[in-house]
Image: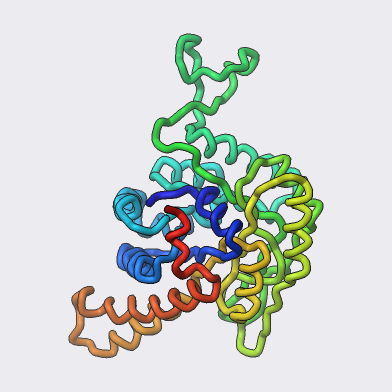
Amino acid sequence: MLYNMKELLAVADKNNFAVPAFNISSYAMFNGIMDISEKMNAPAIIEIHPNELKHIGTDVIEAFKSRAVQSKIPVCIHLDHGASFENVMTAIRAGFTSVMMDASSLPYEENVKITKKVVEAAHAAISYTTVEDADDQRMMQDPSDRKEWHYAPSFLAGDVSVEGELGNVGSIDENSGKVTEGMHFTDPEEAVSFIRETGVDCLAIGIGTSHGLYPKGFVPHIQIDRLKAIRKAIKDAGLDTKLVLHGGSGNPKEELTEASKNGVTKINISSDIKKAYYSKMKEVLQDDKLREPNAIEPACILEMQKVAADRIKWFGADNKASLYR
């Protein structure tokens, strides 16, 4: 069953669990995540970063969608950390059902401007083009704006959901073992304003996590009180935008579980599953006689699945696929 993010997370929000969003960078990893999610009857978010998309190519997305449509579990195919309008449109044209526009490093006004533009494009499933012919059915309704660049239906997808980001998740330099970018925590009232001005379906918030694997001895701390305040402010404003958390790898189980029970409906997991996958691959490749992928990768997939299964349980997503039927 193929879903957009808004549809998928609405059920998670109502039932107080979070859906793990696993970043994959190969078809083998995709199948491994789908297999373990189906085994555990858990909804799945297949997440692909623009750099990962360049690696695997956009043609493979149709194969991902084909399996998702036939699957017994709900599946969303999501662009992670789109850095530009071009990134987002590439994903929409490839068939993604959800996209992220991450302009959180820009000043607030610029973040609002580009994110709103992405929301308008994604919700209409449109391309950015000019329409000059007055009889063209794609013509914008506002006659005063017809000679400008316009959004027009692409007929490639429908109602793609959008994730924005407000506040910053830290980043970890794995060479130095230090957090290289300071965390900027999300302000509850600013979150309400951002949602109203952009119309985003999901909002990534800064509450104490970082991308990458934390250095030895560093103990991250998720600000659950801030999370609760953000969620309350959004609900009090009559909005239904869902909250998501980036930098989920390496965080204590107890904090991630608590976050999933207090308003976070999606938690990103990338480094944890890739570490398991490629650490096992390094071990397997010590046997220099191996050269066939079907001899090398199965053990790697199993190690990745062990981590994925833990996160599915931590977030309370196991056996939740039945809620979507």
